[in-house]
Amino acid sequence: MRKPVIAGNWKMYKLLGEAVDTALALKPLVANANHCEVLIAPVFVHLKTIADRLEGSNIKVAAQNCSTETKHSAHTGEVGADMIKDVGCSYVIIGHSERRQFYGETDESVNKKTKAALQFSLTTIVCVGEMLAERESGNAETVVKTQLVGALDGLTVSDMERIIIAYEPVWAIGTGQTATPGQAQEMHGFIRQTLAEMQGEEAAEKTRILYGGSVKAENIKDLMKEADIDGALVGGASLEAESFAKIVNYR
Ligand code: PEP
Image 1 (cartoon, helix red, strand yellow):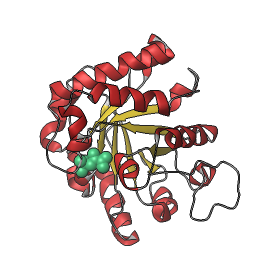
Image 2: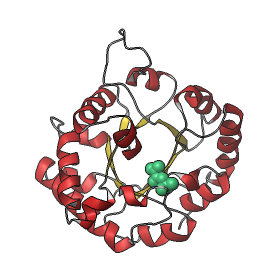
Image 3: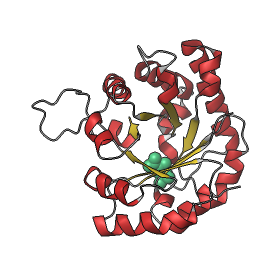
């Protein structure tokens, strides 16, 4: 019932030529992947070119962030959700842990950005996840619940149709230390239960919950066997077309 999503987060990597080469190399490798939605998220300045070059393919393009502001206004350096939509993107990643850690993203700004993205019909991947110390002190669920409640505050059940949650334990991002399928499933189950409390069983059952944190070709299959894991948000292993395609074609 929930179509899996495999999303590649290219972070601040690649010059334009490299990004185009990778996107074009990926196209034939995932052309038959009808079992899932395939997304890549290049940097802002590459979005239009990549979206144009992928038009008509099954690879969709996501931005890695958007502004809290929805009106064209004096906000130097910001990029509005309508601008992202206008250049051919249909998805946006909000609240990635690197933005929370290094750029002052808070649950409040994540909530505002999520609402801005929804206003312009972008499907929004909302990232949540605990730090290592929070897991070790037994607070992982509390942290994730607080992030979820903050990010989704004021959203309606119909808004939830455009929300995807990405659970990314910070200790697993870029470290090579993946959560075990059991650890991931436990948190995904908790997230779905929290979504049910917030938005009702039906909306919770429909919401895709992606796992992120050192996903690679070698571990995707086992992660995808878990009942509440509906796809992956992939960083490092999405930068090469071949390795990302292996993850997309996990079946
Ligand atoms: C990410 O950036 O969202 C991520 C999960 O990175 P990696 O796959 O490299 O751990």
